[in-house]
Length: 314
Image (cartoon, rainbow, N blue to C red; front, side, top):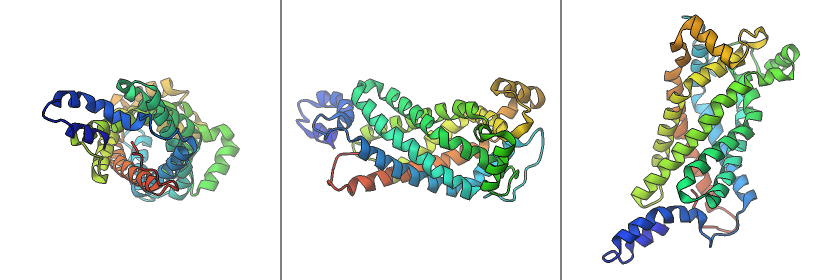
């Protein structure tokens, strides 16, 4: 590690100078002028592979918790939820999760690394926030139809993904596949930006304190914390998104504001926190698995590049 070498040099005479240089050297591993020119296609390819792999693993492992969360949010008043068919819609969902996760990380990684080269070191959080938001916008074109179909299957409106697509398009038009798109962006853009920013900033601080690269369990713990915290904060946005996506052609809500007013008037403010327990559990565990698999896959791809590159991944 660059900063590990600097800390060991002339320890007796320049300890404070070296300590002051540590933060700069942490980011110098990204901005190092001696590094090879920015390879957009390689970073994009590795991001797509790592993101797709992590997305499929976490979705498969935690789908039942997501189903319970969706049914809790969809239930009006004190309605009971069914615990059968917790894997309803998994196959169709994976068909969307794979490209969506691949697109997200495929955009996030090169944008993040480019912005970290351009921004001052003290604005690294802005780079992470911006990259997360742009990744979320790119992935939303696949995520939203996937989410609409998944949630309607989870609430037992359809038995199969092809049937869901056919009926939704015939009854609501193509735009039915993008029901709740605005609320989805309202939830997912801040979610993606905040989660990845918290994760990246915690990793930077941890690496600085530990004076070494982090191992898989450490990345997983940081990912779990970032996911759980972000999941709790964005639960009201998730409830609104769920209600708008599953309403179908009934159109009981006329938009985000009307949805909030109706929920609060009919069910009280606590209804905006429906499903917070399963959501925090799901996203916390999911963050642990996702970021753990993501970092492991990125490291594997970096170690097996044709040019045998040894540059550090952040």
